[in-house]
Image (cartoon, rainbow, N blue to C red; front, top):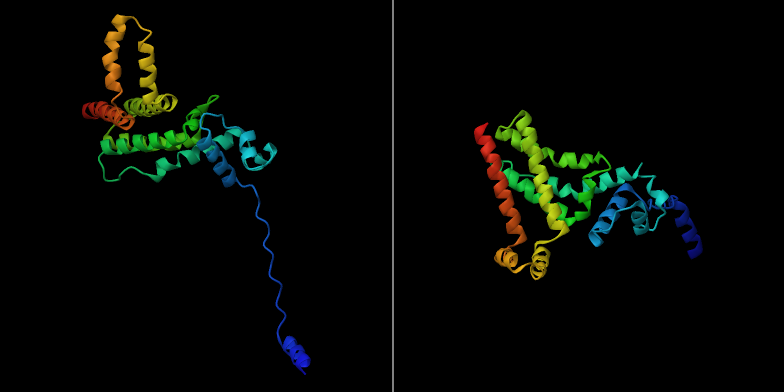
Length: 233
């Protein structure tokens, strides 16, 4: 009887479809490859970023990357866009006056470029300027326009501002301030007594400086120079 009841209960229940098996997600994706590239930049910022290294990071063959990126330039542009995303993620203060907005932009650009110093070489390469870099420099252009600069003066000021900021970061990324001081102190021992006596006090003063304060000093001097142009427009 028990067997018959069980059989009737089974017959009364509608057949349930077997649960659908989830398909295996693709192992590689554009986002995954860009994430892997950023991991490589953080782990070894002074090593060149290549298709072979990114492929090895995700345990794939280099040819597999070209299913997601048409060329190495497209991959590197994507990496740069990811690295500079923090500049857009921390927008300038909308209600701040233009000097405060310029300060915000320069500071955020330095922060992101120092996080991934390898991308400094991706801003312009083999005659190619990355669209990601042009997008990053639209912000100060709009700020300078709101400050009242126009035409050739706007172009010169914008170029000077962006190149000055990048140059400061390139120097800091290539040779930090403490490294500069250590190198200068070692070099002093090889100089003539007269030149050593002239430079030793300067090296001593530089040794007391902080990298953040030094960059902030450069930012304020940059803003002061732009203010002269704004006031004289």
